[in-house]
Image (cartoon, rainbow, N blue to C red; front, side, top):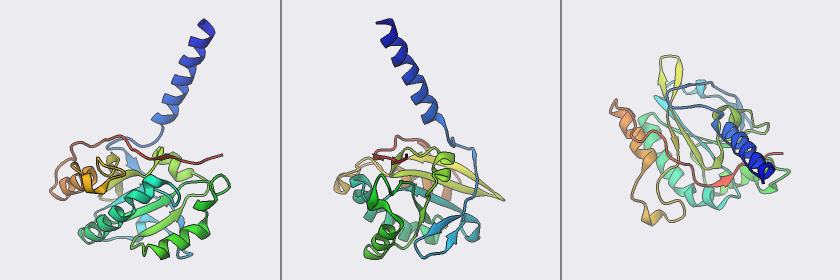
Length: 199
């Protein structure tokens, strides 16, 4: 019994340590350079007019990501012109999940007419730096001179699979607060979605 409890305790500790990795609220995020579906590499520094960015780890196959897809498109169309464009990143290993391959990303972005960049994080370095655990998992960054400061982490709203039943729009509320020069409240929510597929 003691061995079982020790194993469970060790597992819980290791899981907590893994989950704790990544950015926290008000920490500084690093830029990155990832391959976009247009065949070119993209970095946040390219968009000098943005006030910040909404980095969303997402993918093709996950039913949660698919359920949020149209809401993400609508969010970008509304808030990119206000200074907060969506930057979508696929962190999944295509060997484990072939539906999330780069070629499938290109197909889906064209089929759905994505208005935002859709980037491939094939070595998981960006996902690990951010600490993203799910698809979708949202990180709102605010520009502060040359720095990118994390201001919101979590989910998009309170109704992952039923867009018609949304009551709390956490992402929109967070960005609206920043546009009003206020701090998001809440600044952290639990991301709901599929686990990220890694070897």
